Length: 179
Image 1 (cartoon, rainbow, N blue to C red):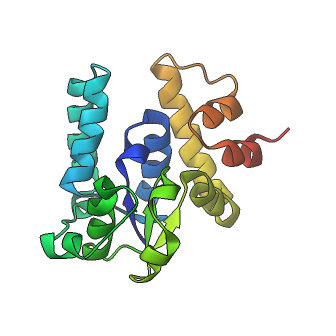
Image 2 (image 1 turned 90 degrees about the vertical axis):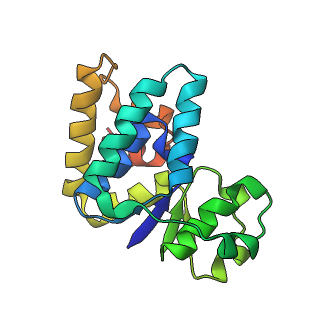
């Protein structure tokens, strides 16, 4: 399954680490465009984190060299979305032959518009929860690694369910860390 990942999913560190950890385990093939990566860099720049973001972007490009896709001007010209700034995301998904778009901005991508090109829209929480239900061990391994990394970077991981909730993954947190 080929999945175009929107910048809003790539920018937050914990969310990105979990999503790309699932991709690294072969659960799906990630895709992004130069503009998506640029949006990630600009979001980091607003918080004074440009240098870190640039290193992270180069690292994910090296880890997933086949992930880069390009949105053609012709494809972009034929599309219309409620937020015209998101047209490039859908165009990249179409031209990159994605099966799905992974985003937190569900309202910006009407299902009817995506259906014309047989693309599904997914929120990270339900997307990752499905992987957990299909292969709990693989996703637990991803989460364990992310928690170890977070802990090494000084992030409190004593309550992993709360950390996932802050990462906008409340259903996944509940499923994985239910008492």
